[in-house]
Length: 126
Image (cartoon, rainbow, N blue to C red; front, side, top):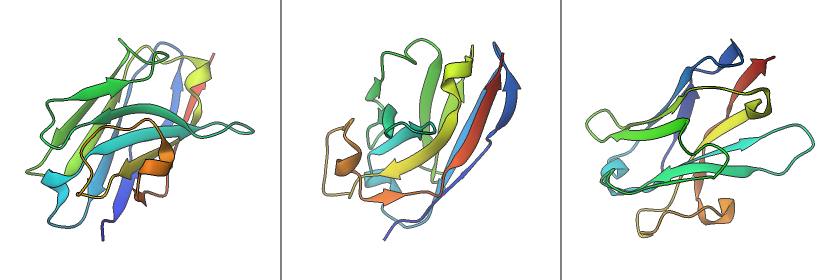
């Protein structure tokens, strides 16, 4: 079982930056592929980015490529989402997710993730 707790959300002006953190419990974190998703009101949950077990592989949605960066600290059992050049359309609840350790590939499909955090609100004002 993996428990995930996000933090770092808030209100920021367009063009600003935020860093989200996701602290994970459990001794399998270094064997876990992690992902970030977001969901805006009235919209489906969408993939933001993912990072491989050892942190070497990363995958980003086109909408955030070049602005957002995912990193992973296995020593701290934490995954981060650095968000720069934020836009009003980035406003959403952001969720951290983990694949079961038996899985390997970074997936953009939320159905492939087995554990979810409670979400943290990010609001970007224009």
